[in-house]
Amino acid sequence: MSKTSQPTAPTVGFVSLGCPKNLVDSEVMMGLLDRGGARLTSRPEEADILVVNTCSFIDTAKQESVDTILEMARFKTSGSAKKLIVAGCLVERYRDEIIKNIPEVDAVVGTGELESILEAAGIAPSHSAVPSPFNILSGNGHAAVREGREAGAGTHKTEFRPEGNLREQQGRFSREEWHGAAHMLPTYLYNEDTPRYISTGKTSAYIKIAEGCDHPCTFCVIPNLRGKFRSRRFESVVAEAQKLVAAGVQEITLIGQDTTCYGEDLGIKDGLALLLESLAGIEGVRWLRFLYAYPNRITGKLLDTIAKHDNICKYLDVPLQHASPDVLKRMKRGAGADIFLKTLEKVRAAVPGIALRTSFIVGFPGESSADYEVLEQFISDAKFDWLGVFNYSDEEGSKAHALDAKLPKRTIESRKRKLMKLQQKISKRAKQQWVGRELVVLAEGESEETSMLWEGRTEFHAPEIDGKVYINDFGELQELEAGKFYRAEITEAHDYDLVARVVAGPL
Image 1 (cartoon, helix red, strand yellow):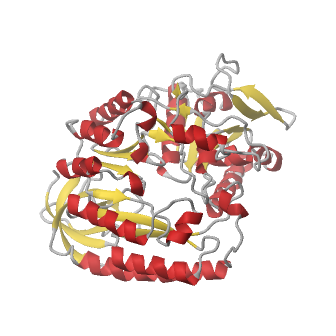
Image 2 (cartoon, rainbow, N blue to C red):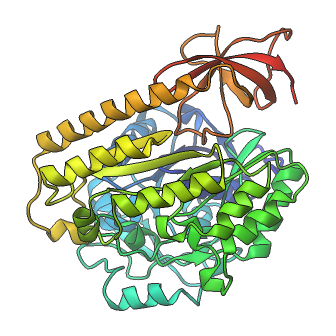
Image 3 (tube, one colour):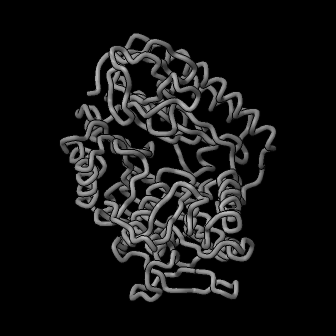
C-alpha cells in the first residue's frame, strides 16, 4: 500500500512502545504519513521528523517512554531531525507536562487523534471541519490548541454498552486527577479503508477489533487512557482481514483490551465466536488467534468455535490477575481459585491440548501472606503453559491508588521471584512432554544469540510474549526463509524454550 514519495517529502522515523494495540496505532499513523507522501525510516539519525508512540500503563512503561523521548530529542541536535512528535497513552495522561517539561517536543497526538499525525508532521492543512482537541507547540513555546481531525476516515462511536455508560456516571473514566489531560475521552476507531504500514513482517499481522474498556478493575487506568469499550463493525474487520490475506498475511492476531466483549455494543451475541467463524473461513488464513479473554466471558460457543477450526490456534490468554477471592474483590474482579480451576477444566475439556497463558499482579494493597499462599497454590494446581507476574504499580487515577495497606517493594519483589521460580519448574516439566512431537513452526529469522540457530514459533506461542523454538537442524534444506512455515520435530526442551529440527517444508 506504499506510494512513491516525492524527493522533497519529509523522512519520518517511528518508535513504538508498549502493547500490540499501541503498535497498531503506530502502523495506522505510519500508513497515514506514507499516503500523505512521507518516507519512513528505521534509522533515527536519518529522520527529518521523529515520532515516539508511548505507553503509560505502569511506572516502568512511563519511565521507558520518557527515556525514549529524551533519547530521540538528541537527534534534533546530533542528527537531521527538525521535529519531535510524542503520541499515545503518555499524551492522554501528561499532555501539559510533556509540553512544559520537554521543550524539544514539537507536537503531541493522543490515542484518539491518530489522524492528526498529518497536521503534526506538517503534511496536512491546519484547518479541519471536524473538531477535536489537539495541542501542538507554537513558536513561542506554549501549547496552542488546534482543531485536529480525530476520525475523518475512521468512525466515531456514539452508542456504548450499558455497563460503560453506567460506569461513566460512577466516575470510572474520570481524569480529574490528571492535570492537563484532555476533557473528551477518545472515540476513534480505524476501519478497513484506513491506511496501515504493517511492521510485523509479510506473514503476520494484528487486527484491532475493539478499543477501550468498561471493566471496573481498581488497579487499571486503561479506561481513562483509551475511553469506553467500542467495537469495530463486523464487516470492517472481515474486510481488513481479507485485504491482509490478499497481501500475503497468513497469521492474524485479533487484539483489544477485552476481545471477548466484542460486538456487545453492536447488539451481537457471541460476537467474538461469530467473528472467528467468519475469519476462519477466509482461504489463506493459516493461524488465527485472539488476545485477551476475560474469564467470565469464555462461553461454550467460543470454545466450540476454537475446537472446530484447525486454523484457529489452540491458545487462550486469560489474564486472571490473582486467585485470592479477597484480593480479587478489592480489585473489583470477582471469582477466585476454585471458580478459575473449574473454568480451566472446562476449557481443556472443550479444546484438548490447548495452551493457556495468564498473568498475575503480586503485591496488591492488602495482599496478606494467606492471600499470597492461595495464589501460589493456584499456580501449582493450574499448571499454565505460559505465565507472567507483574509487581503492583500504584497508579494515580486508579481506585487502588487510594487504598491503604500498601506493601513494601521488597516484599512485592520477593513474592514475584518465588512465583516465577515455581512457574519455571512447572514449565520445565511441561515442555519435556513436547519432545518427540512434530509441529508446524513459523520460522522468524536468525537468532539474536548466534547465526547458527534460527528462531520460530508454533501455534502455541503468541508473537513476542511466549518462549521460542530454536531450530538447529534444517534437515534436507540448505537454508530457511523467514516468514515461511515448516514441519519440525521437537528434539530438546528447556525451562521455557524448545529446540527443533526441520523435517518438511516450506508448507
